[in-house]
Length: 263
Image (cartoon, rainbow, N blue to C red; front, side, top):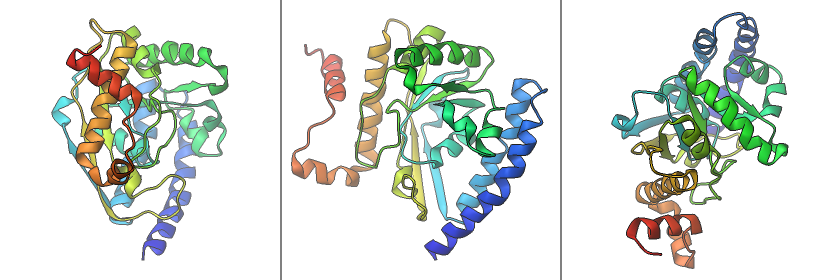
């Protein structure tokens, strides 16, 4: 049944995505918010099939933590699911993405018409400048910005170094950071054809204001909250690591020490 559901979902995507992409390319003369509204209507449509065809539901904790104005979302990244779901959960937003994605047939062509932040990851430090410059423009237009600070999709129960680009953008733009934890990878694995039914939990943390904090401190606090929330909500993903004696990420440890006044 899981194989059949996953196959049918792949067929649905193959049928739905190209017309949306072609229509999206035709919206280029329209204002940014109108283009965004039209093209991203693809997300709730696909999420309907995710729920009713794949059997993947979700619940949101901490929705009252969503600020009234634009912010930078620092989210855990485990699968393609959150790239669709965050568009439904939050106000109009855009993603920091690899410029190469815009060359992907149909999907990338339509994506190119959505106000976003496309960066050249090979540019090194210049990539951070691209994030800040384009990100400030998107935030000024009223869009939220999603950054996956680990830089790539990670398996449940694991973590990578949190890069400070999102926190740096928030500080430069004078907007808060909103941390997000979830377990999408438990049901929708990275690059996996099979998707498993179940309920994904998305937890939204308290906004971290940029006042009085540098970007590294904001980034460390966001990481501390996200990783602690992952351990709290999904302890079964970390039980094996605890038995092996694995140590918490050094960035989390440093943030915990700062929070407790340790040097």
